[in-house]
Each structure stands twice: as structure tokens, then as C-alpha cells.
Image: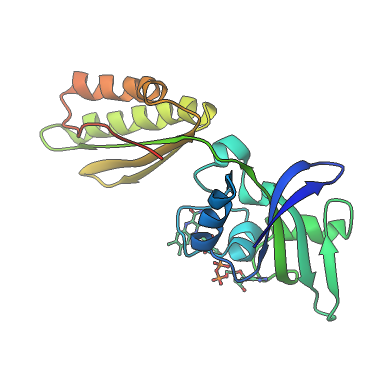
Length: 211
Ligand SMILES: Cc1cc2nc3c(=O)[nH]c(=O)nc-3n(C[C@H](O)[C@H](O)[C@H](O)COP(=O)(O)OP(=O)(O)OC[C@H]3O[C@@H](n4cnc5c(N)ncnc54)[C@H](O)[C@@H]3O)c2cc1C
């Protein structure tokens, strides 16, 4: 892993170059130790240069910075004819666009990946759950619909909201955003809480973390 000052016709700024074996459990702390963040997924065991970025890659900073494939500045690859090539939006660009979301293991063997890196910043996370006990399924799923509709303004504000749904509970965990205060996040969650209160639906207190 290496931090670069990257300059191209489409990007000027910090970048992180990683070898293909690097997992997010290594890339996240490395970037953080340099005051930076890289865009990754929810699971630390996923490989940054493998199926994640090649498969488009969605994660906690996607609303703010875009998908993983949007972060790629450069792929260093070996093609089926044994050539070591660098592909960028300007150089071997057909390969660059194919690899950036075209699916892992499809076009070439990635040796390294260079991605955009952003200044680290305070990140707020929140979580809450609500339950179907004591209300009809119609009322419960009405509240689920409210939460999903309210995820749109959350997303537009730069947050990513992840949830696990069953016919008895909806666990919203986490909502996560960079550069958003607890108060701003609460205001975005409040329309859902108001519906839960009005419908008499049991819910857990919103918990926050600032990281
Ligand atoms: C617990 C868990 C949580 C996840 N969370 C998220 C998430 O939040 N967001 C998200 O977008 N995805 C997520 N995923 C999906 C994950 O992005 C894909 O499974 C991805 O394909 C994993 O890539 P990998 O390289 O780590 O895995 P692998 O299984 O090693 O590889 C996947 C594919 O990529 C190919 N590949 C791997 N390395 C290379 C290389 N160097 N060159 C060329 N091809 C290569 C492989 O041949 C294979 O086809 C999650 C997966 C798991 C298991």
C-alpha cells in the first residue's frame, strides 16, 4: 500500500495504490494513518482490487463519493496474452472501463489498483429498530414504507442507511455519514420516528457513535 499525489486529466489529489491481495481490514487503517479515507464496503474481509471494485462496489461512503468503480484511477493488470498493462481513462481505456464494474475475473488479472483518497473527517453513525408486536402487518409495513421513503433524503444528504427486514422487525443499522452532526442525522430520521409514535409501534432508542 502506498499513498500517491496523483495527477491526471480527470483527477488531481491524494490516491492510494494497493496490491491485489490487500483487504479492507488493511486498507482502511492504512489510509486512516495518513489522514485519509478510501471508499470501501461493509465487510473488512473483501479485497479492494478484486471482485469488489471490479463488480462496482457499494459501501458506506457511496452516497457521498460514488461507487467503488468510480474511485478507480488506474488498474495494473496482466492480460490473457501475458502482457503487463496499465489501464486508465486515457491509456488502454477499453480495459479500464471494462474492469471498473464489469465483474471480477472477467477481463484480466489485477496486480494493483490505484483509487482516489479523501481527507478523513468526523463520521456519525446511528442505529434503531422497530417491531411488529401489537400492531397489524399493514401498520408495520406502512412504517417500513415510511422508513424507505425517508431513506431518499438521507441518501441525498450524503448518508448511507442499511437495514435488515423481517415480518417482525426492521433493524436500521447503521445509518452512516461523514461530516454530518448527530442533530442533522436526527432531523433526517425524525419523520420515521414520528410515524412510529403515531402508529403505536414499539421502537428502540436511536443510538449514535461519532468516529
Ligand atoms: C461478508 C461480505 C460482505 C460484503 N459486503 C459488501 C458491501 O458492503 N458492498 C459490496 O459492494 N459488496 C459486498 N460484498 C460482496 C463482495 O464485494 C464480492 O463478494 C466481491 O466479489 C469480493 O471480492 P474479493 O476479491 O474479495 O473475493 P474473491 O471471491 O476472491 O473474488 C471475487 C471475484 O473476483 C475475481 N478476482 C479476485 N481477485 C482478482 C484479481 N486480482 N484480478 C482479477 N480478478 C480477481 C475472482 O476471480 C472472482 O471472480 C460482501 C461480501 C461478503 C462475503
